[in-house]
Length: 327
Ligand code: NDP
Image (cartoon, rainbow, N blue to C red):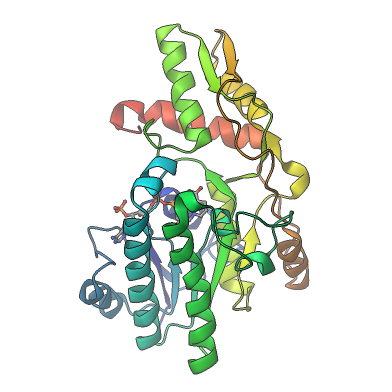
């Protein structure tokens, strides 16, 4: 009988990218489904994972061998600041219900998703897997961060007591199709795509908060999806692994804006409002562990999609879907 891979949060940015990869990569290939394997993508209306009974019913229905746990209460800076308890509690409930059911139903492997924003506020760079718990997270999103850090603690405990193979990955900033493009709380790339689109439509200047100088690592959702499939097949540790482009591929906010201007065909003025805060100049994460393990597992070196191309594909998706509510 074929095995089931259950993906929670299957309708979100990362879940949709996983669906795309599984639907387009040939069966049996490095990032494709295995022969006889069935992939099930859950959305919140299939099961509210904050509820133990609904979560249990989903596990009972699909009897997964593997779980990729993406579902989370995710939000921008202001939503986090205003709702630290909500982010803490809802994520704790979802994570605990998914992991306990994965244990009860004897799931062979669970890959959960942490985030680079769970790292300590004061920490040395580059970020590595061993620094997750070395100090308190940034106060703005301490609820989300502690709930996510706890996943690593839960994974360690399930493994120590029962031998369960529950692990986690830490993606850097993700962007792509099906992102949250809502201007009230979108991350930097979807917000800039949306604002550039509107500036082009209204023939107004594009104003960017800050100097444009800070550097960040961005990962295309479809690349992240492939790396998560690699982790499902080949990553055997319980400790998290950072999934990111190399540190050398850090890119400035100005370069991001230039690429968006090019991809959207915006011809107006671009203004940098340096009276607005820049945030931290850089917070690079090391992907050395990923590169080393992929090599050891016999995988080809991973070819990240060139940033311009990934951005162009995201912009095209946004424009196509704007009228259908991609905002
Ligand atoms: P999205 O916000 O795009 O999607 C969230 C998903 O979680 C949706 O499928 C949503 O379902 C589901 N969900 C939310 N609440 C519930 C609930 N109560 N019960 C069941 N399902 C629920 O998230 P992303 O795809 O961006 O993130 C995926 C994972 O990656 C998360 O764990 C996130 O923390 C992590 N991550 C994301 C980063 C990013 O830049 N986006 C960076 C680093 C980590 P529905 O839409 O059907 O309501």
